[in-house]
Image (cartoon, rainbow, N blue to C red; front, side, top):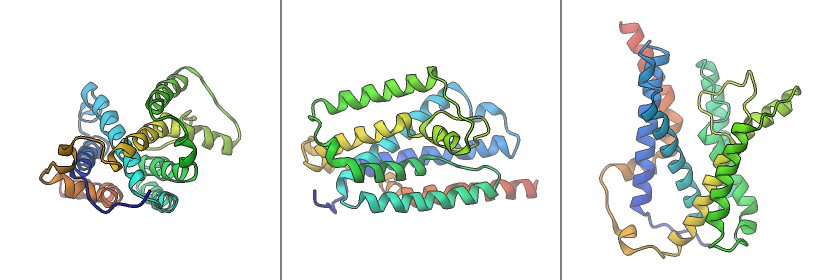
Length: 239
């Protein structure tokens, strides 16, 4: 699959929308955590649902984008290195992100780069059924099967997989299960997009503002929380 340079604005726009909502969500969290705002600003039935919808959209689109690149192993390693930097910075900020969305995306890109040819052996008609079933099954397993360990390495592995262990503290937490299957579902959809099998309007639609944000999604993700943290600290000092 050769890398294509043409941008599909609807994908950039949806990614940009997801990033904007993520920044707003984290700003509201900072207002609650650092400024003493009411808890409902961050945790309420509407935001709790929207948070996972738009995070899922972001992960799905990352899976789609993996079909536009032959360098998923390299991209995954870069994302994991950047994610490690985010862990170090947020640990200093006393709001550590040990396995957030960038960690997940780095792992997913690396995983797909290594195993993509195997997933492509699955008949296309069966792939979405398998991936959606796996999303539901792993979510149910996490909710109803309790796993714990005493050894620190096993505790870390279980937490990364989705069985969050006591003492594991990650302010942004997107474990491998069930989210890896959302990413893989995106890789399935990405095949049809790359092969231009969707209606012509999908490739020609134009949108203001959001495509620019979507193209800078990684940079915004890396910088937004330190910037928001600086803003709330400035508010604290001024008030």
